[in-house]
Length: 213
Image 1 (spheres, one colour):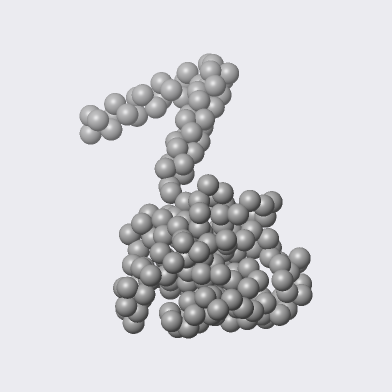
Image 2 (image 1 turned 30 degrees about the vertical axis):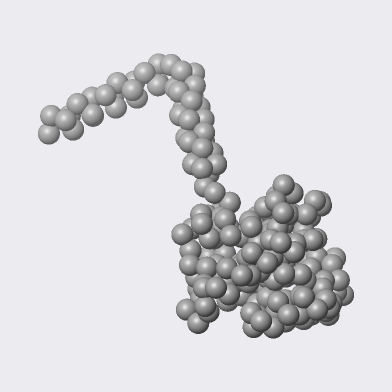
């Protein structure tokens, strides 16, 4: 009771001071607001890109993970990695690409790892409204691409493209798959689905880094 009474007395004193010195009260309030805002900024800055990306995914019901035309092993690995992260937060993800998978080594990469990738020709073929671009930062290679505003962009190529809610373009990295691999580390996520052998994922990440363009 004494503690509550003391708090009440201090509150009354503060209220009286505010009435007598309104300018001082406003100044104190501004200082408090600035301190709170600074604290929020510091907390956000401590969140790694991987944590922020996972939270972004968790807010979606379904996503399209979109690769660039004629995807290479880096694009495929990064896309499958993003789809795996999405699945771990109960978000449906469809990996899609425009064009064709032409080069023999790229076709072999897809075949050996038995990757589920869907081709598209028109914007209406996109499986979801929320689009995550991987290994490129501007949609291209299909009709209506100019009208697509990606929710997120994860890339290592220079460019002016950006995601509406999230952009992580690291031009000092040799592969987008390396960026996605860090996302798994940031979230202590499991990179291998139960029905996949660990060596397959390890091989995918290694090969994508070695063959990225």
